[in-house]
Length: 311
Ligand SMILES: Nc1nc2c(ncn2[C@@H]2O[C@H](COP(=O)(O)OP(=O)(O)OP(=O)(O)O)[C@@H](O)[C@H]2O)c(=O)[nH]1
Ligand SMILES: [Mg+2]
Image 1: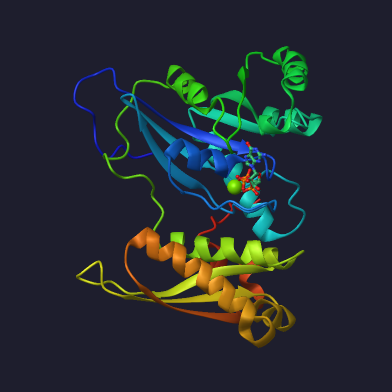
Image 2: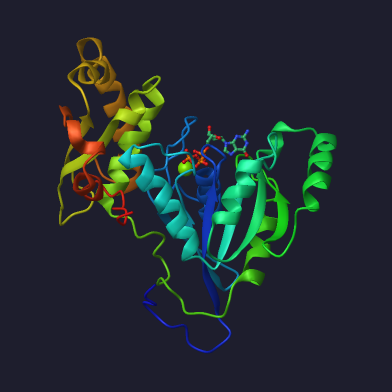
């Protein structure tokens, strides 16, 4: 990690906090709530996040740099999935502290325990998310069962609802106690290291994930081709993006009957992006078959998904 700027005076606390766990446990929802803005896309589908999403949270004079990660799953032989899982392990390894997310309704499974044992990096806070789905009695039962799990590795067990915010402030107040003295890694005002192109691609991908069924969301990626710069930031900006799919048949489904599918995705994405960038956007979306997008390491890296080490 490069410290871009040192805080004047000593005693400043800062650190990297990885947000890890199985897919769909609410990691990205938590990141967005901690930052008070949308930093990562969220959908009801598992394996939404594909890369490390960095979000800076300056709070009470402490800089917490969150690293949201792809859900840890059995990747099989798919390169994209292997890259995703590797990304999650790598982020934990470089973190001072790991927030490990489980769903409160499911609890800590033997698979979770095995993952935690495999994670290198700092200590672990076990986060029981989605407590809004449990009655208080059930929650108490669950917590009693897991508080026995706190050990040298698991420092705390904290129930939250990332969705409605319950107990999130308490969790955020707890984190500085686990962080070392350190530099201000990011200057005030910088909330992420994601490029505008990447943020745009993610917003479009989120809308596609929400519109499409079954396996199709997993067969696509988004690449921004043109994102026009303007001297006057309120002027209309040109945006051209490609939706990559693996097969010809998928192209037709994404475009939809008379182009309705693509139109809907385009309208939803444009609205959100216009609000985000504060300017009107002239957006063109095209679907292209690019068979190797998920199997070629170079293309994956180009799309912003990290390249795995050889193994
Ligand atoms: N009821 C409830 N739903 C939640 C909560 N937190 C997240 N969700 C929902 O769970 C789903 C998955 O949320 P994400 O934040 O995308 O989960 P994730 O862990 O980042 O998922 P991956 O990126 O796929 O690993 C979404 O539908 C969220 O709205 C919560 O506290 N309560
Ligand atoms: Mg996510």
